[in-house]
Image 1 (cartoon, rainbow, N blue to C red):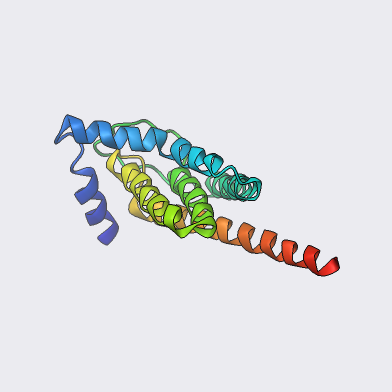
Image 2 (spheres, rainbow, N blue to C red):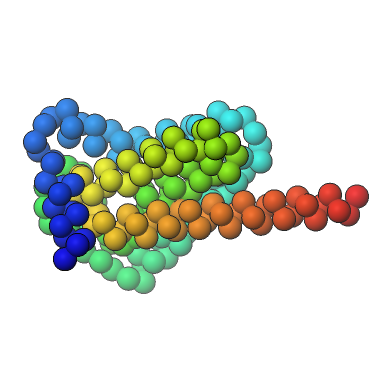
Length: 164
């Protein structure tokens, strides 16, 4: 199975190097706050609103999915402990919701943010918290939330301008 092979390749690196282990743990634990800080540092009210709204929507859908569909977490090299359902990855959903918000605001900031969101997602497999499908669906969820919020708010902005 491809998912198992990808999981084994990424998670199999856990324990090989203490520096790599700590890097994976740091990215897993602090990746989302870092992306959130970058959103705040734009100092643009509209970007912060879009980022926060995308984050909340992605979280709500992710938690709803976990409540409906329980999926066991991997039983492998575990560097962090997680107790709820594995599917979908909330870290991936939230990281990509914030990164896509930054991408819609400014591609020069957004492209590195998307790469960093991908590292957050990969770190979830590395630390043994998620299967590859969990992070792929989580990423798609975050991207979809950010896209929907961006389109909704931009269309609302255009409609408000047309009323003037």
